[in-house]
Image 1 (cartoon, rainbow, N blue to C red):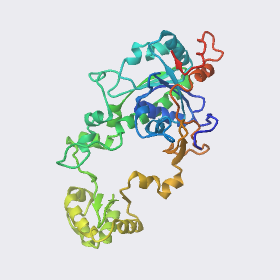
Image 2: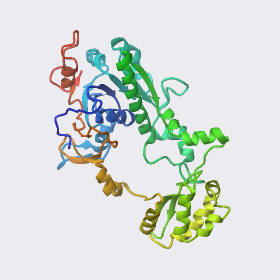
Image 3: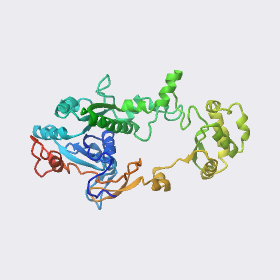
Image 4: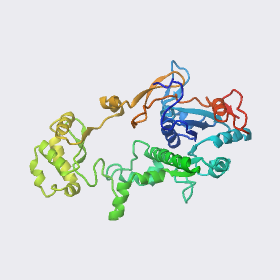
Length: 409
């Protein structure tokens, strides 16, 4: 559906209330995962502009009308937005009333910022002992780098990721996808869900300290274990693999394509496909370890053969032989791929300004539940009065809902 439904979800996290103090990528992505699974995620934003990603292109509009950021929409669908002036005492009191009935607070400010406003974990735990409070930051809430600013590219460099990305002898390159932000968002959403399960059993919430640095080290298990086991750092080897070959991108007659012959049986198929069965007995290539050690020489022999035919023919040949292989797709190519269509990953999305666009939906299937986009990405402050009325209805001592305007101020 396009986001013009009734705004209600029946997903596995339906009934969970999340206040998201999220900006740009890591926090909003974690919030979007919870919202996609049905949680009521309320985005807390500054009335003067809101989340900075609201200004990121592409900015779509109809006939020169109001614009809306498609970058923002991609990680803020299925949420509501309230606009709150955190420097105003009355507004802060109303926000704390929401915290008192929330299940989760999710934030990705620099360490200590919300604490100075009286919205840190200890202060909110005194109001709500069951609260799960997740802080996402570059380097964590404590330690020598806790106050250090962080963006995805700086953490990719700090975490060692860029030391194994790119080509040997070339300048450092980052991953083209902001994995520092999005890995932290994944770890955060996963850990929040675990902490919610414990809170339901024990009545005790938790403070989750999720760092981009730790998340990137966490997903680098193979690289860190290689260092622990050998004492040697990994190196940049392009698309190749340090322990497998042939396992990389190769140049065909017209384009590059990828094969991943990760065992001896698959290597035999590759050698026979290119008409070089004798390579299987060559001592440089007769085991996985030897092929990895001599992969530059092996690549030269294979590419001399691959140059005779276009990539699509080699892909068909490798598929016929059961060798894992793939083209190097652009995003337009993969998003229109028939398999992606079959998986139902690309969904229509209605923006608040009337633009009809598309988005990649929640990518994991769960039996007994069908993913839907049940709310369009929100306009800034569009749900301020609505959320206060819903969450605090009938609660003794709760501040009165604000008048019919979009900002708490």
